[in-house]
Each structure stands twice: as C-alpha cells, then as structure tokens.
Length: 153
Image (cartoon, rainbow, N blue to C red):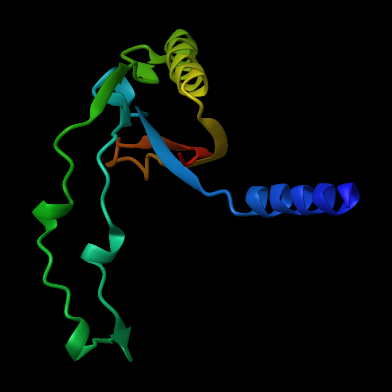
C-alpha cells in the first residue's frame, strides 16, 4: 500500500512539473553605430503587457477575412511607461570607441544580474545589425534582444 501512495505521489510530481508555465520578459539594447557619435544608444524594458490578438487580423488569399477585420489603432499598441537606460555610442568623432563598448557591457551585465536576482533566467539572445549602406548612408544600429523567462506564479 505504501508503494502505491509513493507511486501516486511521484506521478503527481511529474505531472506538476510538466504543467509548469513560464512568463517572459524582453529587454532590448539599441546601440548606435553612426560615425561621429551622433546617434543614441539605449537599453529598453517595460512591464506593461499587450495582447497580440488585439492587434491581429486573419487573411485569406492576401485579403482580410470579412469577419476578422482589425479595427485596432496603432496608438493602442504604444507603451508609454518604460524604463530607458542610457548607453554609450560605439563611435565618437575619432572612430570606434572600445571603452564605450566595455562600458555598455558593464551596464547590460548589471541589468542581466538584476533580472537574475528577481528570478528571471536568460533564455534566448538574438541580435541584428543595420549598418552603413555606403557613401551617402552613414547610419546604423546594433540591436540585441534579451529574452528572459521565469515560472509563472
């Protein structure tokens, strides 16, 4: 009989761990790669939530489904309350500034460590670059998204 109770308890634990759900938080760093240091670099985060379904419509054959028309306004998507942390630009007037990159790494590491102490695990990191497209462009950004997760309470 004891073995049966232990087996049931063990199975409940297995099913409980399988049923765990996570919540996610995205932190974005945008670092300017504009020559002469003219750009702006920031670390952005928010706790405001948006439901993507409120801004989604379905399409069939390239046309909106008549009964699923998206009536949302872009201003409804905007988040007005967010945390903006200054970062340094990759370039200054003399060129690439490695000290600025090291400083940004220190600030981003601090944010990651803070999120970790709050129970968040760094799950994914993805980055992209839009860089100088030639003689007349002179613009670019380096963007990184840090995706954190933790068990939903």
